[in-house]
Length: 339
Image 1 (tube, rainbow, N blue to C red):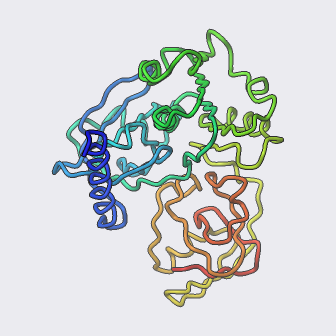
Image 2: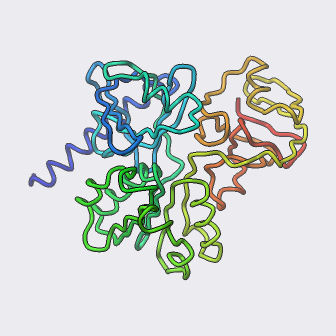
Image 3: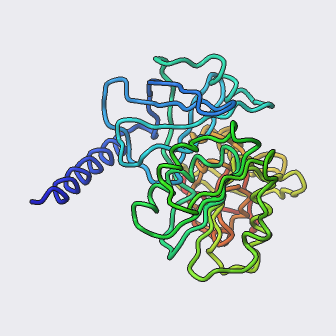
């Protein structure tokens, strides 16, 4: 067996062991230790999480995120390390000016050596095969993109990254990107020097075979979605860190039959399906409760869901097989859920 074959065999063995570990985790929740915390940019801390017993961690793919249990809240953070490294998870946490408790806890209270609950990993922002790639990242949105860049570069596919931030000092992983990039592969766009990313020019004309991946602030994502409105279906892939605004949507009552438990629930418009299930004594995995993480997805056996989550792509809006019960409703008077 040549060295390359040996390396590949070892990689497959490690992946198999990690997948086995993932299958044995109860409810997908682990207790991991904070191995290190490093200031990576203005207001950004990079955390490395490891198994306190030195075990392997479940495998993941570029675009995946984990849930971190932080004090009395749960927050989602994209994995930004190397998927081939099963010894540690790496996430970057931006200190939010209007923190709801997650980022402030990480920056002000969490310290190396402490143990945190970790859920996942899950991936709703998967890297799909394409002839070439254009990555657009804004601020902390570079976190899932970094792993994608590393994967695409290793595959030999052509790629470009346009990365915007408030200033150079606020932009994370710039040195790592420089090591990965060739001439013209990465364009840094610090707003205080060069202004915001010119999305309209960047995406003016559809390019056959080009996949566009975008992650960042809501304004950037909406601008990219608008610019790609006439691009082929499936060309654009986005991930939001903040849930869509659902305040203008009306929620009609829905009858929910729980197939496995046999319960029948009448869910009023003022109550989420998740709350109704929990009030009836049913346990539903959930983390964000605002349609971002996907942890509460339940299989739909009958009826048509009205998807209101923030992670399904436009092509997935007609999916009738599952729904995020924390925010989504029904287009039919009733639903049958596999719970």
